[in-house]
Image 1 (cartoon, rainbow, N blue to C red):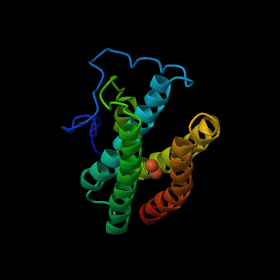
Image 2: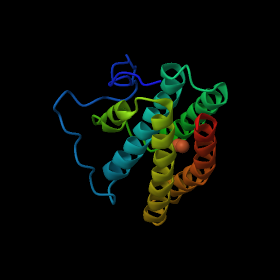
Image 3: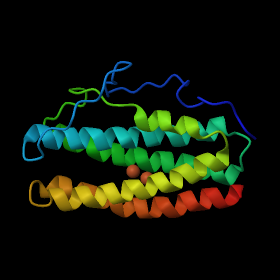
Length: 177
Ligand SMILES: [Fe+2]
Ligand SMILES: [Fe+2]
């Protein structure tokens, strides 16, 4: 069933512990990766992408409550998995003394979910988002390997798990089609 536009961004979401850009404010450009601050910027950015995925999957299960139960269960399971990735990144930020709310984050990814008016559109969108997540994880792993092998390993593990997410997201899509 087709729903009105703006379903996701109209939800009251608690983005804690992240800080969100004010309306019209642009997220600051990440600092050089060779600095502690620059590494922190990447960790914060990816952690916030995971946070948006956590909320998107769990919100979709409610917004598209008329979609197959198998699909909604997969979305809720994926939400939990992204929560795990989020916790790994937050933990690493703590170890490196990177404060989560030091810089504001863009809600662009979250707002892009508003394009999804049906469960099918959302399922398609997330299948692609999971693959983008995998690619980003692999790139961060390679870039960070010489700078910070511990953080690099976290990104490698995330990329590895995103491969499973791609399969689960495809399954969630199949139940709708
Ligand atoms: Fe993830
Ligand atoms: Fe994922």
